[in-house]
Image (tube, rainbow over all chains, first blue to last red; front, side, top):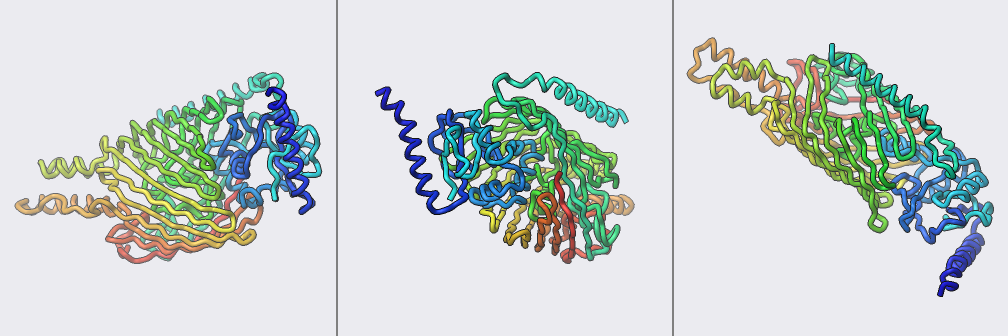
Length: 148
Length: 421
């Protein structure tokens, strides 16, 4: 029984990798939402990711704390991430965070430089969640959502 | 004088406290956690540079009744309607954080004397529960707290019919916000309690005690909604001379003074608003009801606004209205049986009372405009409004002259540049 439950996460990872592989056949520079490979977070949907990145939620679906990591302002990953997930342009996103900041409700996510920077930060902290290009995936992080 | 001094002192104290906390912040980081690259102290700000034209020469159009003047009577083009500058200092120590926000905009004495809009300390008890102590802007309507940040709204200014209807806008006290979720629906429930004592800078103050309220926000994808309710006990000396004279006219005068005087009068408001914004277009609608059993009256207000986003351009249109839920005229003191000199005096008093009641707004406005997001932190806007006070009310116009024809539309044109930094 214990062996079975221990093998579950690796099965889940296998399925995720398969799903990613299938999705990758259709596009080149896809974005994947990643958490640390040490994170227990299993599945998360697009709405839940959007809520964390827009400062509306601070927990993963399993109840553990979630901290978003953004790509830098002007990065193409950042623009397409928010466009796909929230329909927001960089200007709308700026308006959203201005509203949050100037009402004392929160500050925008911290930024990391490039896919490697995001991956390094996320890998080191199971609470963190970021997004990188699919090609930049490695064993230190785990994809929890693929953006179409 | 003394109060001014106290205010300056408290601002100095707040600055010292922030400086002290920030000097200790470097030691507050937990071991094992990666160092936060974001700074502990953050300075940011926002502002609007605007110019407004009004075609009426018999009253001023403004964004708020708490202004000295506006466009129309005082000058055809006014920079004072929308222009403002806000500066904010944020302190982030993890679970503890603090915010200080100062806004400079035209006030009732015509000055741009800065006012402390936000000044509070927040403690994040859990990722979902936060409590704050200090000054907050009242979380009413969809975005009363951020109405002064022009960059965050599509239009040049929040509809005056709706957002101008509340006599108080901030609370000094405590509030708690709890975030929770049900499936894909996110909720934020906020409760607050406090008081406020604001210098109107025309020799009067407006005080509210026992402020309590609740605000509940819902987010689900592109849909957001907010329900809020607030109440407080209001005190201000507006119209005091009139009431003193009224009380000289026996029981009838006493009854009128008791009815209209703003002494320990409960002010209450409820509002509900909803916005759908998938990105390419948006629709926003709100309605609210304010009540005071006083000179300030009470009314029901609503607006609907919508726009399309085409690249950096956002054309939009909207309609707003407010109607009074109380009579905006009063027969006043009975003149029958009074000796002629007294009757003349009573007549003048009645006119004075009705002058105040005409300020209870009954008005509607059609608006159309264009927002251009010229850069990621600059928006340029052009807006046309057709403002129509109704039922003998002067609407939200100020400095009305004898020539102001009731029920006649005023046309307003605005240009504005909003920025955040």
